Length: 105
Image (cartoon, rainbow, N blue to C red; front, side):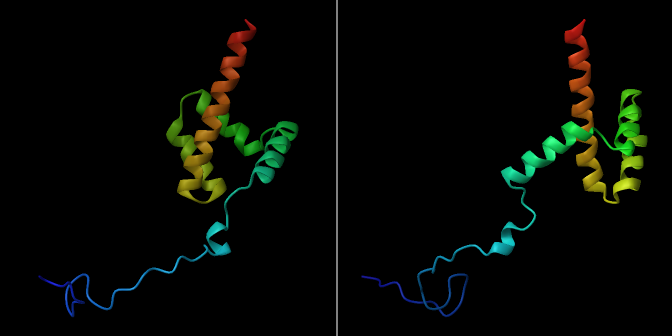
């Protein structure tokens, strides 16, 4: 009969203990968007429309200048990853506009 003992070396070394489950800290939630904030921002977007730089970026998207659009948005926003996200949002908006125009005809 072999008895498993606590190892002094190796990956599973040390005294065996059970993990103590801990509640996640509030700081882990920082920056996550709530339903209420998303709803408010959607209403504001619907009422106010797009910002001037967003309208210009949408025009660049319409004529097919994706790289120039990316550079333009990055210069205005400041971050590459945020610019990519914004470009995707504006692409979706342009597609929705085209779809709405097609349904009207």
